[in-house]
Image 1: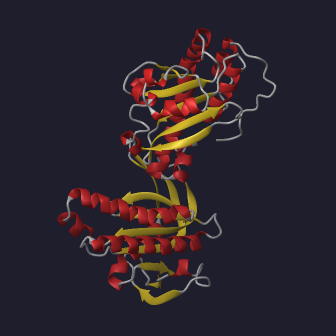
Image 2 (image 1 turned 90 degrees about the horizontal axis):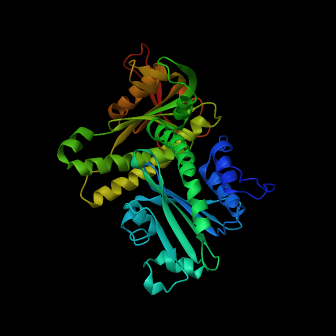
Image 3 (image 1 turned 180 degrees about the vertical axis):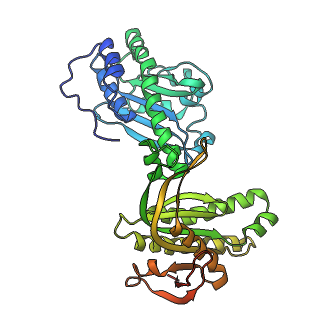
Length: 399
């Protein structure tokens, strides 16, 4: 959400004014919640006695089923709440007006002044009566390819909405559907890119970095992590247990990385590649803080697995720092936004050495030089690294 609508000087509106505004004057407004709040206020200024309105949107997000935008009389901005997937099994959804619309009904109308025993039965109606509302209507907000979202309006006017109010509200629905779908598509594109390639890469792709070979040089701390004995686990554990284990492992590693400003560029089987751009002055320290938190999370995960009779989870992390080429690599029709270069190769080789040297986290001398005054590091000597002509001085981090 950005700034709330600024319509202090808007003159009284007509239906046509509202539709014209929604069609022609919202192009520069990025957020549907702000558009919806301003729409409700403008509808009030046409004479419609709106007291409360909501949009219930189904979104494609790895964590959330949907979002609910709620506007109330006297508010200059709407409130957004996220709705998790489990709501579909809860009483707040089952039998609700939103549920009925999702099931294919084209209108839910409830005259709240009438005897409650004669109307629909759901806790929402009792809540609205308690708030003094007298009439409620819900309609599908129809997007392309049969997608149904829901918009609702309520009033506290004695007698509820009249026929003219209902007709005026229906007038704006087709345009609101188009305007909301555009914003949702934009947000969906951003969400999918953030989910699958990371936030920074997603921003670059949205900004036009889609040509094969396009990219830039980035100075970064590089972290590569790999789970130990995964082949044995995947061969001996049930499939669903293996998937759950991988998800728990990636949560334990990924959340600290994101929290400390790192960006995960890819998951590779049971491994991950992340960078901490040096444009952030504390990038290298942030990486080690993330590693320390991930270590604690992995220990807790191993403890939970141990209670189920499973062996502890072991992993290795290789860390280096240097310049990487950050951009589009691939075939003409299938691209990957990733980092390549000798610095990435070094981090990968160090991760492989963690098993041989029996160290969980190995750092290159180049990385250690940037953090050794602030962190306790263990010097483990010089070791040959495959693909590099000279032995590399290595350090272990046990924090």
